[in-house]
Length: 47
Image (cartoon, rainbow, N blue to C red):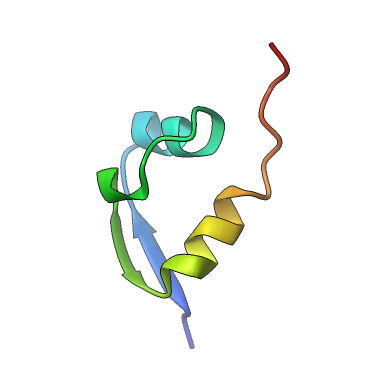
């Protein structure tokens, strides 16, 4: 069983993971909370 699916292009995924872009910029089906936790698994680069 799949809890969520995230469909997007590479540039938007990078923006979601590292720049904190809005999840509305990607197609999400299922539990959005699962996708948010997934995106939080990647540490943002230090500036």
